[in-house]
Length: 73
Image 1 (tube, helix red, strand yellow):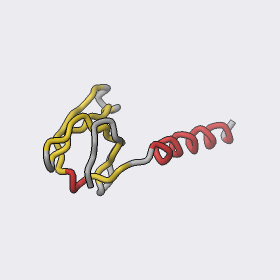
Image 2: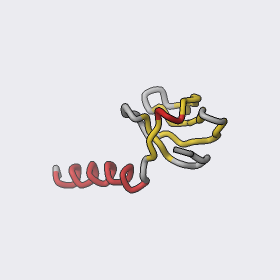
Image 3: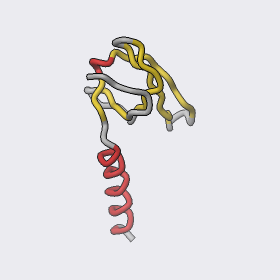
Image 4: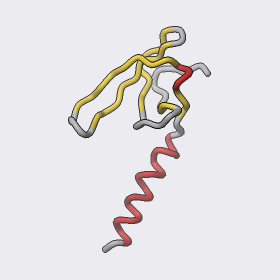
C-alpha cells in the first residue's frame, strides 16, 4: 500500500495513531505524541507494517469515552 505525508496510520499489530511525515521507498517516517512522557516521538517504519487509520475510527473512540463519562454523572 502506498502512503503519503499527512495520512494517519497505525501498526498492524496495534499502536497509537501515527502521522506520516515522509515516505522513502518502502520506509515511512511517522510522528506521534507519547502522552506518558509528554513529548513527540518520530520513527522510520517499514510500510508493510502499517495500516491506514480512518479519522472517523480514531474520533469514534474519543466520542465513546465522552459518552461513558457523561453517563457516569
